[in-house]
Amino acid sequence: AEVSALLGRLPSAVGYQPNLQQEMGALQERITSTKKGSITSVQAVYVPADDLTDPAPATTFAHLDATIVMNRALTEIGIYPAVDVLDSSSNSLDPEVVGE
Image (cartoon, rainbow, N blue to C red; front, side):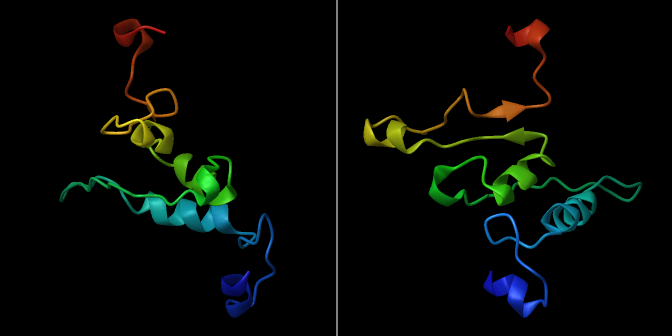
């Protein structure tokens, strides 16, 4: 809400700016391959209250080819790395290769 106020915009969706999706899209579109080279982007995304449906992470995830989700419950029982394979995803996975 404070950031929206500083930018002179009305807050919406849990306090995020109304044009969050457009701004995130513009940023992510800059990460691309060209004739001069390519960029690989590894992004760490803070997920408030571990809620994957929060507008900020949900908008970010929509632009990513793969996501690795860490799980606090796995850490608590001593499993490292605490990767939640059921919440993680990749557009490169082919069901014919890895199964459903």
